[in-house]
Length: 239
Image (cartoon, rainbow, N blue to C red; front, top):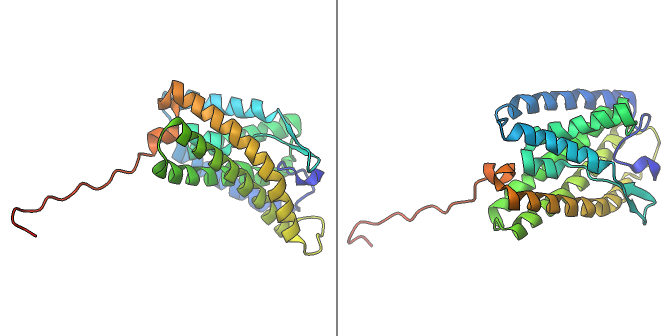
């Protein structure tokens, strides 16, 4: 079960697959930099720093998953997507992962591309897609915002965990005897519990910020509520 942590250690995935995902992560992060520059302003830039610092601090706090003998922590993709948007949010999570790998040895340095792909790219993208959907159908009240944050955070953790399953299928160094379905199920089960914890943290944080400064929540600014089309007046006498 130690090898099922989201931070992939060196040697879990073979070198060629790790190199491919490193190139993929670098390309997508470069695009995020170019796209995120359009969003950066006097309000978003300091917020991005605060979000990265908050995710880094909270990731240092692990909560145990007693049914699996492992512990979990906040990934941060949904939180970053809601507060600073998908492009800058992915960069925030990626920076945290790089610092953790280089300074704290959390995840192998050679596996950085894999970890960034799963947690910074897949997790953030899945979260923002759900956020964009839910904020168009749910009321923009504290309760609606909390549900949006919780569901998107839970989904982002599950998507990230299945990203690892895909990578292991492509280049896992231990033969599972064709039991990829078992690996996917185990990862989903463990990370479902982690996702619930992440959802609660994300919902609490986002609602707290929204109550004090709703203008600092990127998702509320960028995703406009759906406006019904105005009725077209008919000419007098027309049926």
